[in-house]
Every structure is written in C-alpha cells, then in structure tokens.
Image (tube, rainbow, N blue to C red; front, side):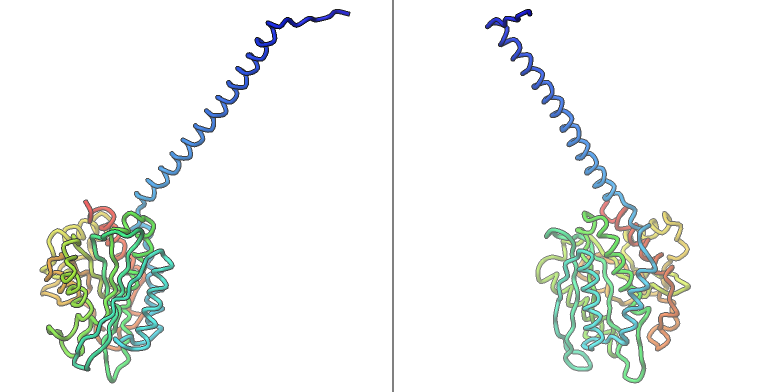
Length: 326
C-alpha cells in the first residue's frame, strides 16, 4: 500500500486555492445580486416614468362621471343649508378621500335676500403638503325655488360629476395631481338676481380668503366647469376668457378631434370664475349656456349624456397634462 506524505509546505497551498474558489464564488453571487438590484431599480423607474406619461384623458370615463350626477340627482334639490346638500357634501368627501385626496371644509355664513345662510366650500389637495398652482372648480348647489322641484342635473350636477371623475384620473399621475387644487363651491346660485351681494357666495368668499392670506399669486390659472352635460354639447366660452387659457382649451380639443364642441358665447357670462379673475387669477369657464331647460324643473338627468361629460373631462385632462404647466 502506497503511503502519501503531505509536506508542511503543501498544506497552505491547498487552503489558498480553496479560499480563492470561495472568494470567486462569492464575487459571482454579489455580481448577480447587483445586476438584479439594478434591474429592479430600472423597472421601478420605468414604471414611474410610465405613470408620469400616462394619457389620463384616455382614462376619463363619461360613464363614471354620469354615475356621480345620478347619485346627486337622487338626493333631490340641493339648495344651500338644506339636508340634501349636506348629504351631497358627504358623498363628495367620501369619493375624494377614497381616491387619495385630502378635503378641507371651508365654512362661512353670508347675508342673503333670505337672511343669513351657512355655506360650505370643499377644497381638495393631493399628496404631500405643497402649494398647488392651478384650480379646477365647480359649484354643487342648486338654485332655490319655492314652488318647483329643481334637481339641477346639468346645473350643477354635470360639472360636479366631471370634477369628481377628473379627481380620479389626476390621481393616476400623483405629481400632476399635487399641482391642482379642486374647489367645490357652495352658493353659486343667486336667490333673486346676480349682484355684489347675491349669488357667487362661495367663489367670492374663496377669492377673499386667497387675497387675505396673500395666496392668489400662487395660482397660474384655473378651469371652472358649469353645465357641461347637455346631449347636444357645445361649450360656449365667455368672450372675455383669458386668451392663453382659451387657446390651450381649443388646442386640446383639436388634439382630441373634439374642436366642433367648443366655441365662444356672444356675450359675457357671470359665473364663479368672475371673482377669481377679479383678483388676478386667470380662470376659464367651460359652460354650455345654450341649454333651454336652464333653471327650470326640466333640468333632469334624461337631458344629459355620458359622452358629453367625457368630451368635457377629456379635453380638460389633456390640457392639464400637456399644456397647463409648460
């Protein structure tokens, strides 16, 4: 039988080879893990980029907006101070908070031709605390009638439904959503006639607070929605609309091949954009003022279409995503 004799000098050499093999194996494992980590980061960055580039105007659903309008109409007339408008507020807040928006109630009271009335604006912001620089607005109250049941499907159910759906699609692009403040005005409707002390209660109060807090200069512009659900939709921009905003809305409608639904009205329109323009915030009013059932009991859900809501919302979403912050 042969006997193998290991010399003292051969032992370290064998150990060194073993250590080198283990080191090489560990290096390969580390390299594989590093590549995996980089790939994961690349996938994360790609997904974030896709989110930033998402075409939210294609995600805007007229059917979802219409469902919101139906839910509000089902509550009945919603004049300021009523039980129905408080239920409407609860509905709006729930929808917004479920979508990741933070909602603030702006409570105030004003003297009206019917005495002192309590009003509540709803202000919604998205994401980490920041300073939004663009407004998207609608009123959600209905006009007060003593002898008629006015549910305001178009005025202002349609615009509120569009703004809720816009909130949903904006949340798909969080960075964009953080730049927009959503405002739901109470008390837009006049009790008798629009004057400095009747009508536009919510927007006038909101504007005054911006001035008092020196915040008006933070906003580069805004969009107001009002009566945007008519089946035969033609958005009639006020002739004194801020030119840059009007140009952007027309360009957005052109890009989506919806230009035929947008034109100018033949006279000025008093609406919630008015107090905001007066304090230096350029706000455009997207409104279809050619609507025969306006301020009549015939303003009901059957006069509206989901497609009209989609047209309005898609154009606004395109403008916000592609043009508003360029």
